Length: 300
Image (cartoon, rainbow, N blue to C red; front, side, top):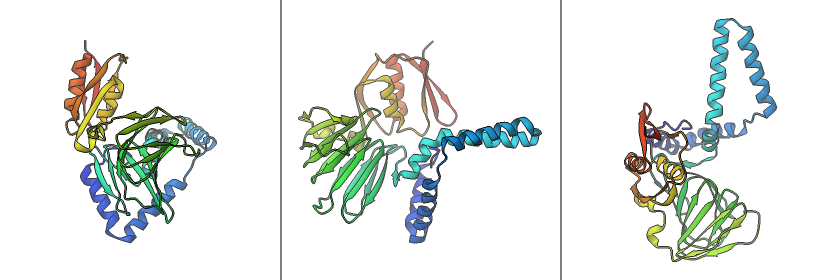
């Protein structure tokens, strides 16, 4: 699951196995708890690296090869560490397609492609952490158990509504379709900005931006309907948004100016077509490699 190579069928099979019995789910939770408990300090990491380096110098060829294999495995773990950490924390993580999840209280979470959440329900509250990507929430109101969504360092608290939370690299954007939400730029402060239907705001580093009003319902989570809308996006951001709907990684080779701006409507089920259009617009050529890897580079 952490490698990103798990197919939709394999993920569906895993979910079916996990939900088939209480014993299966208990086994999974036990293993995940073990992963969460494992922590390697920087000092331990340096010790392990020094030990592997000494083995590589002192042992004969066969032992050295074993050591190199162990080192390669360690490097692989470092490369996949962000994905592995996300997998350990997440209760739901979509593949390349949006997915609708019905929560135990009857609320619904519609997750964008390559999006992840963790779910913490108790007798006094319903807490969702948006760990990655975007999510649309249709909340069943319960005054005794507030519904809260945390993303980055802020929080969105429902007052009985439908709202969209989009987690970007440097900010979080919240848009309301129905009802009301309170947006906290920092989860640790009591002050909040209240949004109503058709309103939007963003927050970052503990601060919320001015409220945008008159947001059309069509602008709320268009990906939930299979559409990707780009509005004056930088080239790197446009590629990043489209890449979440592909099985393989997308890389940009060389320096690409951020002056190129991309606007347009694309389909999330045709990401390669969208990337081809963007490449042609920006004067880039496309190189396709095994493993569904795609490289965009300057033509010529």
